[in-house]
Every structure is written in C-alpha cells, then in structure tokens.
Picture 1 (cartoon, rainbow, N blue to C red):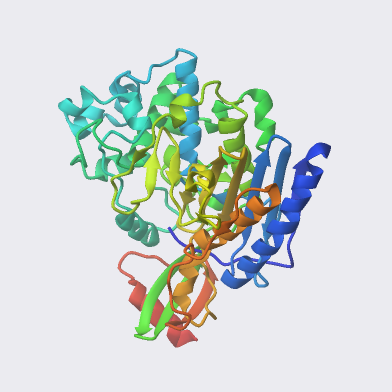
Picture 2 (picture 1 turned 180 degrees about the vertical axis):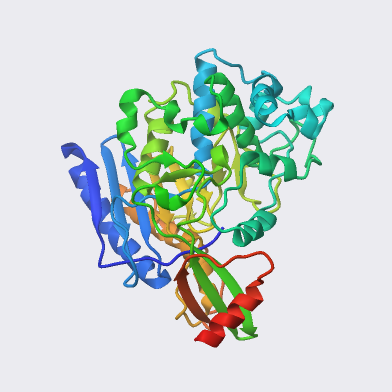
Amino acid sequence: MIGLLFIILGSQMCVSVNLDSEGKHIRIRSMVQPVLDHYSAIFNSSLSFGYADSLGRVSLISNSPHGKPITEDTVIPLGSIAKSWIMAWILKKAEAGELHLKDLASKLVDPTMKRLNGTTIADLWGEDVAAILTVDDLVSMRSGFQDYNDTYWSAWNIDHPGMDILPFDYLHRVDKKLACPVGTCAWYSSINYMLLGFALVELEGLDRWDDLDQLGVLSPEDRNRYGHTSFAGKGPCSKTPHMAHQFLAKIFMINPKTEYRLYEDIIDDSCLNGWTCGNIISTGGDAAQFFYDLLLDKRIINDTTPMIDHFEKIQNPWCPVCYYSRGLIRIIYPFFPVDPSVPAEDLYLTGHPGIDWGSSAPVCGANLKHGFTFCLAFTAAAGMNCSLPNVNRNEGMTIGSSCYAYDAVMKAVGGPRINCTYAMPPVPLEGPKAECQWKRGRSGVQGFSLRDEIRQLLQQS
C-alpha cells in the first residue's frame, strides 16, 4: 500500500514528560529531531515519531520543505497496528473469564456472521476446519488461512475511488485453500483478525459489526492517554479530524531510463482498511504509548506472558525475517550492533508494523531489554523525491530512516549503537529518473486504464 507527499515550514515537536525525565528526553529530542529533518527532506515525506518510557513520552514531527505540513495533531492511518489492539482486547476478555483461548472460534464468530451475512466458518472453509479452529489459532496466526489478495484489492480500490471494501467482501473472495493445516504453522493472514472482530461483536452484544468501539479495550480513565487515536468505520479518511493527506503511487515506465509517477491524494478514499485488521488512525506518539502501556507498564492487561511466550517464524515468503506471537511481530530488521559483542537481541523491537496504501509505520514496538518503546510513522509507504539521481532509492525511506532514528534513541539512552549500513537497500546512486505529478482526487474509473490516464496527463503537461 503506497505513498505520499507532504510537508512543511520547518519542524515542530510536542512533548509530554515528567520533570525527572528532562535530561534523557531532552537528549532524545535533540538527537532524533535532526535525523527526522534530514530524512523528511531527502524523501519528501512527513514523519511522526514517538518514544515512551517509565518517565513519560516524547513526540516529534518533521516535514519536508515542500507541500502541506503536518502538525502534532495530525493523525495517520497505521494499518496492521490495529491487530495488537484487537489481540489485547481478546486476551483481556480471556483474563476476565469471558472466553477461553482454546474455545472453538465458531462458537463466538458464527452467530454474528450468520445473522449479518448468512454464513459461518464451516460454510467458508469447511466442517473439518470449523471443528478444530480455536480462538487462539486466530490470535496467533495459526489458522492456516490465506491472506487477502492485496494485488486484487489494490486494483479494485483504484477502480472504485471512495468506496469501502467491507469485511465480508474480503472473507468471500479470499482463497479458501489452507496454506497449512490448522494449528501447524504461523501463516500471516489479516482474515484472522476480521474474524476476531466478529467474535468481539458477539461478546459485546452488538447488532452490527460497525458498532464495535475498538477503544473498548481501554479503561475509561486510560482513553485520555490516546487523544490522537481512533478506528475508522465506513467512509472517507477525510471525515476524521486532523487527517494526514496520503498519496497512492501509480508508476509507469516511459522508457528504460525514465519512470512516470502519479501520486494521487487518497484522503477522500475509504480508511476502513479491513476493519479490525487495519483501521487504526493514530500518531507515532500514541502508537509508542500503546506498546509501552501494553508490554512494559502492563496497564492494559495484567499478564503479558501469553503475548510474548512463543514467537514462531512466519512461513509467508514475503517476510522470511518475521516471527509472530499473539498479536505481535518481532521482525529481525537489518539493524546490527556496531559492537559485535552486543547480542543482536538487544536491538529487537516487539510490537507490530503497519502499512497502508498511502502511509506506513514499519518499525513500531517495545525494546524489552532497555525498557522503552519506539515508533516512526510516515505519510507515505515509500519516498517521493523525484529529483533523486536514482528514483528507486525512495524505496529505502521507511526502514532506513527508522534505523537511523532508532540509533539516535539508543545514543540518547546510553544503549548499544546501531550500524544502519544495511538498512537502506543496495540501490546504485545513479539509475532511473522520474517525471512526477501530484494531484488531489481520483480518476480511477472502470475501463479507464492507467496507461490511458498517464497518456492524457503527459499530453496536458
């Protein structure tokens, strides 16, 4: 899910700290802000940074020198980070005795699906699956269910600007052939978390799936800690106050040495993003606060052991370095200690990445060793600097920028320094150039091809 332009008038920051934290948090602000400014300028995208520890929170933003700036109040769609919220709610209900992780999923999922759509797990995947699939299989990505076809739905989204893709659309179209037998492997699929959404609708006694208040995992007093977090229902992103613009990239080769890139502002498109698997709207600061409250402060649920007691390697070929537990991913990023005697595990972040068609937060979670959380969100899924001597270097924006910001945090807190050499993809300095155009509004109409659209735009320019 792809990209944006954004952007400026300098850098701003908002900070929420206790007096005791001033020394450390001042160092973090002074060391991280220049990194954010450097990479927002290089990649022509805005950045929203968050850090939290026992002493408080640091939130920073940075804008490139072009376009519209974000502010400390600007919120960004953060995709699959929503899964960690749903996992926490399921485990909280298990803690309260409202469900058991070994319950059959059909017991909780089928009543809502049958009532709203006339279907059940057995109808979709067969009686043999329904007879053994547990709630825990869904939470831990061990159902064996295939993930939705992102290529198909991305193309559908382009052809149907402004329309919602509903949860049942995903469920009925997904490939029903299991990637592995139920309970035998970790296979990442957002379908699991849509089904958990229906389970929560049943547990909450709601009439409709879109009545679910996904902030319900929080105690009433804790809701005030997340003033910049919400979960999208049906309708455009733009209906959410302070929403960031996000740009979807359409790429077309003019000739072997030149690309044409059209960046369409998708703020008026749906933000539903698979509902309970990807509809969170937040900031880097709120996301960092959530993972701190969940994993380090343990104020959301009491026992975090079920979340982190067993990370299993995901078998999806697109992520050979991903390990999944319940609602959390540990990704072995190409972040290596400068000092070879430091265990690589000291740099691991436990949390969840999120990527949307026009925004991203691929490095977001808790460093359990050093007791802090880190999250860096972007108003794009890749860089948008069309002046780079090799336009493909834009692909290194999210992981590369995150590594250097993470290293700045480590320097500020006295942790091990990070070698970020391998965080940027090995792309030559010189390469394909790009001609680019940005526009607000969508022209994706069925029967009107991207080639036709680009031909018209090139003729107009």
